[in-house]
Image 1 (cartoon, rainbow, N blue to C red):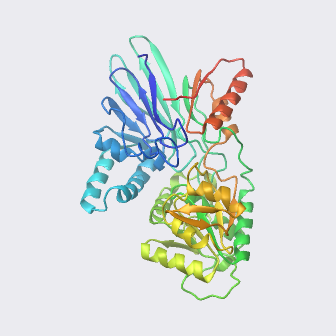
Image 2 (cartoon, rainbow, N blue to C red):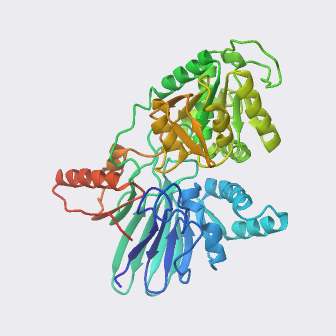
Amino acid sequence: MHYPHIIHHGAINGVTGSCHQLHMDAQSSVLIDCGIFQGNEPAAEERVRNIEFSVQGIDALIVTHVHADHIGRIPYLLAAGFEGPIICSEPSAKLLPLVLEDAFKLEFSRDTRNLDRYLQRVRKQTVAVPFGQWFRISQSDTLQARIRLQRAGHILGSAYVECDLTYPQTCMSQRIVFSGDLGAPNTPLLLGPQSPERADILILESTYGDRLHEDRVKRQDRLERVIDKALADQGTLLIPAFSLGRTQELLYEIEDILHRKSLLTPAAVSLDEDQSLPINWPQLPVIIDSPLASRLTAAYRGLDIYWNAHAQQRLKAGRSPLNFQQLITVDSHAKHLQVVNYLSSTGRPAIVIAANGMCSNGRIVNYLKAMLGDERHNVLFMGYQAQGTPGAAIQKHGPKGGYVDLEGERHRISADITTLGGYSAHADQLDLLNFVSGMDHWPEQIRLVHGEISAKQALAAELQVLYGTRNLPVDVLIPAS
């Protein structure tokens, strides 16, 4: 086998299950991410809980960010015998235990002792690395390996990984870059990604490799109009959103709308008050119905040193972008059911942000089951809906008055269904091309992962065109394994 050698254990037949193994030599390798499969992607059912590769010789797991499709198989990796360091950025090290704790409770056990042992092991193996600093992972007479994490702009703490390999006996060196999930410009709270100096091999995500996002600058205006419509319809605006990243981004933008309208009220909003309709912006409750989202939002507030300059200015102005007066959090399951019943029966306008983002599980399902059949309510999609998920079905069939199956029950869709562009946390085709063209030394090989086949093919074609402008050769691969 020729080294370095890369094997892909996921994210090659779709956009989930990210897991890539970089074999540095015959004895040593590193794993970049270890995520679960979701939706109807091949192997989503049979491989989601399995580690189908040997953990022997894996020196480290490098985590690009803490979304489930990048870290969800960590419990199974540990169970398979992996005892090496889990390397991630400093913000990710704070967020990782929260996400893994929630997943452990859902998939394994709520027993306190088992959970504590598991989290202690995760914390013991986690190594937090500052952005922009080289970290050595292997040093011998035959191999010197180091990695560097750079901001990826996808969610707080997200990183792309530069792997610098040197083989002293042959005087050969290779710079291999794993993009992880790259963010788009103008993302709330986050600094945008900057291209690396160079790469010999680039493993590049391609989620939106075949399209351009809608204008992100005007997206807040579009969000405001959607909320205005929900108020006029005198119903609830349901926003399926992942607990990490999208929820905090939405809160940041909603707070700014309220601030611009000068409608933030000094008193907290209560769901228990019997208020007459029509309701207006000052009385509009913004509800986070997700214990995990609440904990992660609190963690985001504690990591404000990693926010971008614009967000820092809001803090200095005395504003609380993630903790404003009209924000209500729902933690207990009993309270959740109470809120679902209250909003579905009273018709009081409200914004509900609930997980999960693709409507495949979580508390959003109860809201949908109670409200999809009522035309007063609105459902707003703001992120990618993987094929085979209920979110994709609602998005496709809802505008036609169709139906969706939720937990084995068929539900007619009468609620208004809206998809709002400009909110994707992923880079679009132009952003991905700019990530490559921004390097001083362009990669000679690019492997496209984390995307549907059509997106990969479209991006591959555009990369060939890009390299043609400089008369440079490039080997663009779409791996099958």
